[in-house]
Length: 249
Image (cartoon, rainbow, N blue to C red; front, top):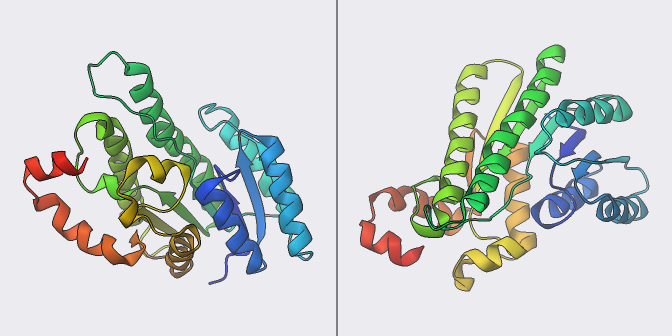
């Protein structure tokens, strides 16, 4: 099924902007949200200049303003004449060792990556349930596969919560016209990934995002992207000794 009207949050940079470019090249109409309206405006001008037949609607949105999420989604739905797919992509990578005096960073991470993602899922599914059709995509992380120690603990937990939400919704909505996909990206060349992992394991942005978009288009229930080496890591990581996981983190 072709989803022609796609909303992406966190679309001003990184994976969100790269997905927008990929979908625009496919001729899809886009609704783009992020905190930085200036960056969204520049991206809209780029996309409509490169693909004149594509409509790009933009709105400033801080996803941590939970009351604003359904209002903005509703405005974009009306502007595009509907929404077929919502990609919950906005997230942050802050984090500190729990108990180290940086509770603010960990609480912000948990709030944006899980609670605010839940607010986005609520708004998207309200739209989809009303029309009995749609595709919800949750961008989790390979960090969700196993609880990670140290400064990655809160991030890992937030993404695991999001993955569990996706699994539950996919089970609930199986056999209905509403699809749910949970993506677990490995290291892809964005500013966040550059700080997070071994450079030898970081996929180029175009390759990583192409894998994400391919999995989204197939509407797979759960996908580790890119496939290599992350499908293997998905199997192995839960069984590694704690000492090895600590050294990797």
